[in-house]
Each structure stands twice: as structure tokens, then as C-alpha cells.
Image (cartoon, rainbow, N blue to C red; front, side, top):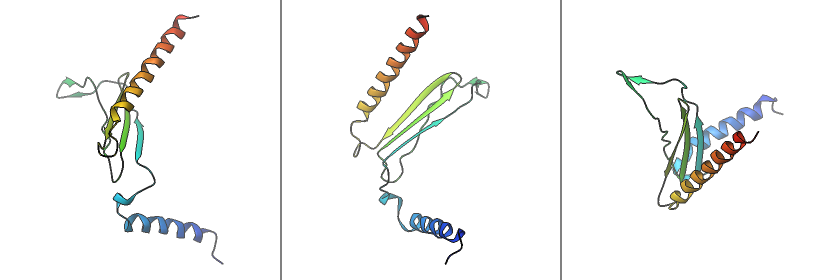
Length: 116
């Protein structure tokens, strides 16, 4: 019988072999990636010029169809959306939905702040 750590080592080895043997293009577990990146709360400068806004870009890898990233910077929250038009032709619908939900959230927060 294997010692207790052996099954874990075998599993890790199997996962490593799987990732090395199969190309990324055949990855079928997911086609969407979403992340948030907390950025600095203080302004950044390059050669004396202040960075006014920062937008995240998350690349598509393999068979991913949609990548969504949020990045905060100096009190702002910006989003970046990248899609593969062949597999996600309605990314504009997604973006419009995100914008509508954001506007509704802002409206609720403002009305909650006005009501004691």
C-alpha cells in the first residue's frame, strides 16, 4: 500500500503530465476568465506626467471566449473586456448589461445615502 503522501504526489504528477501533453487549445474546462486587480490608491507618474486612468487587459488563451478584468486606481474602478468574436459575438450585450447593473447599483447607493 502506498504511504499517505504517495496518492497526492501521483495526482500532482498526473496533472502536470496532462498540462504538458495536451495543448492549451484543447482545454475544455472553461471558456471565461474573470479577475480583479487592486491597484494603487495613490497617483502614479511617468516622467512627471500623472497617470489619469488605467484599464486592465486580460489576454485570451486557448479556447477562451471572454476575458473580464477589473482594476482599481486612485478611487476609480475600470473594467476591460476582451472577446473572441467567432465564439462570443454578443460581447456588446454583456458590456451593456454590466453597465446597466452598475448604473442601478450607483442609483441605489445614492438613494440609500439620501434616506436617513
